[in-house]
Image (tube, rainbow, N blue to C red; front, side):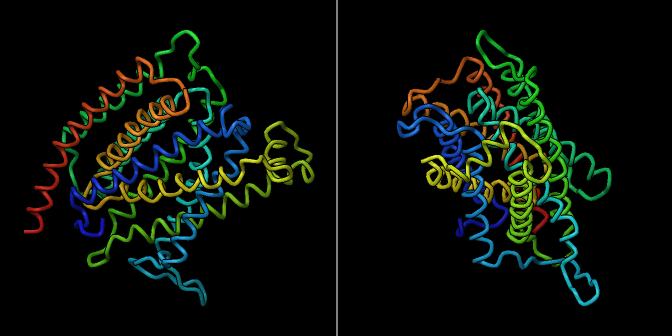
Length: 360
């Protein structure tokens, strides 16, 4: 990756490959640990796996950003509050980290629903594709985004939504009825709202760099992840002590507390599994904030890459562990995904020519 040029198509493909690789691992491990085949010991409860996989994901992110000091972000302007001096970007990157703290657990919870990895990814990714297009429209209106949206990008959005619609509304006999499941809808709405603010903030940061100030995606990622980890830890402590402090009782809170009091024998393995999801976070943010591209394009590349990874993860889980193979609607969705990718490739060729002309 270091040999490719920043903002080039080669760099974009490298990020997509890494994103795809680690998302396949994530998709397989979620179903593995929450199923009934995990090392012959019986699967973990969804909340148990969420606890330990989140630990692993957050740990790898924090280790990297702290060890390499990515948090020293290149700023447009330093602000002063008494004797404290800090980058102006912290005023909106920290809120982005708070929304990330919601995205992290809701993503894992979507995978634990009784639906295939492919369906979970289609639903989440399609919603983010719509958000990305709306963010571009808003920021063009605000005169923050100076680029135009190519018609091929809009076509790709349409086909991506068709792909999602196939899986969202095609409910066969015995299939999980996502639309009429209250917990599933609550998880999805939380995910969508959090991602909407996060994508707007990421693109606000990308599109408001002052002349001569380099786009510091690593700095953005570092501050966002440090904030997200702190928020998750605070909420986890609150949930753990809620029965004692507020007399709040529920089955999920009991499972959460018992995850620490009497941890599942697979708890360390679940932490290792969460490392893959943590690595996904790096490439996800870097694709979302890819230099010289619109939110629509970057969002489509990000989401469609994971959708293809979802199909591959479902296949791998079926072949290795005897899980269910992708259904008819999964394959139909995949066809529409590849059509969307075709339109994206045309848009990418146009964008690279545009960027090359601007540099000459």
